[in-house]
Image 1: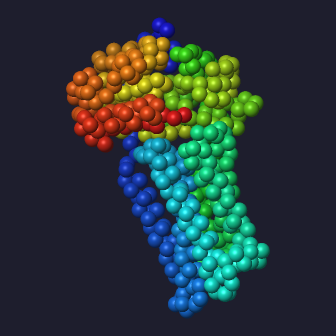
Image 2: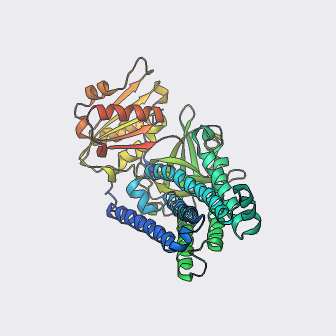
Image 3: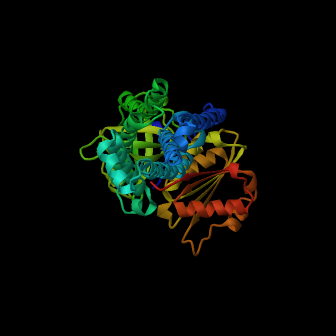
Length: 459
């Protein structure tokens, strides 16, 4: 494939070395973390102040108190996990989508455990108060107490979301199924709020507490609705994106060129990804993530896709004129992460696509070395474009082609090819196994953690 391309039809013009976008200060994240901690303290205070020594020392008092504390804390942590996955642009820009999802996955099990503990302790505590067994008390709670059935249904929906998020389940489940199951998390939040306001002693007869807790739930839902529904809808309607062309890049890999109006207003940096929704029968309700392989110009946006499923496979068959909707951009895998004027870009397979866009966005004074890895020459995706961009920068491009047994890429190889690797910012993108191998090699070579930037590539 002998072609070089930058968007807008400028063949061979080289990289557009754009001014870097303003950096969102990490102080905003510190403030958000402080507010989150303060909120947790308020939640604990709500549970404590709702009790008295008399109720605590009554039969089942301490158990019931522990149940309420676990329930409130679990519900609060659940709201935090929802916000972490809420696609808030300022937070995404600073921390990156991958980091936020990692925190989401680590925090969500604690929220679920606390909510389960709440239910268990509530049954035991109420049973101790009434001097009846747990099973009898559970039956009484479900059939006689208002809001209890809603609470049980909410918990079961959360369990379903947790089960489908397990790695073994995700390997055997379609993305669309996982997505639909997770939509029920929002229904679980609504049901849990109804349950808490109906039965929580800290809310019954306390209109201020009731109003604050309701506002917290509504505010969380509002943030998610704005950034995951309204903003993508507005951008899709405004830009009116449609498919212009689909170009084969390598076996099973295609570039999709999109056109629209006001493309320069899309706040996309090189290295980021978007969620794309094909507005076609049978596909319109699915949104899948794809890396941007070239920074948008006045008219065009491009993604490069490997066919690994129904949605990505359909990309190769798109007809010109097909309308699409987008969400995003997302990710902190951008030039803003640079801490020096030297960069090393390492990519394997289709992982070179966000690096190709990042290459356009790096400041002009940055000394760039790029290393690409592939099994054969045909698998070197966007090869001619990478050569053109690197040559215009007077950088270096190393291509390692061959099987892992015959062409090794490890710490020793990196040190030989890039002797100053420990003093560079390193951007790594590729399959999960490749990325993990590179991270171990970079740590062996003494590259500081703050200079290693990687994007999970498991789309």
